[in-house]
Amino acid sequence: MANKKRRHSRTVELKRQMEQEKLADEKSRAKNRWNPAGQVLLWIDLVFLAATSLLELNGLISETAAALCTLLSVVLLLAALWLLFGSKKGQDGFGGGRRL
Image (tube, rainbow, N blue to C red; front, side):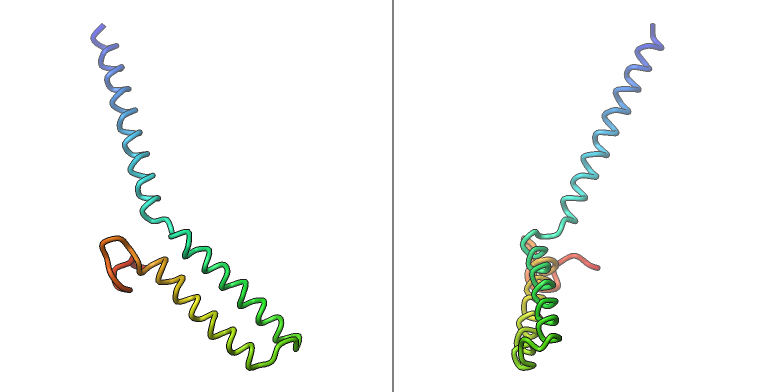
């Protein structure tokens, strides 16, 4: 009879430990998740830059317009990177984000 109690308590203990590890894992994933706004802005920037390159390659826009679009793309890239790595609650500026 005593053995059954030990097995049961050991099983319950193992289940609790596994649940705690699972919760810790989920918290870790949530902490390391990218900001959705920054992620979307990064994708938009990538598509915008690719479309601009294709239009310039086919001669549909001038070099000046392509240069302006590239400049705009760099600004969007910096904004996306700031959203992803620079802006955290309780931390200011570029130095406060996650380390790569």
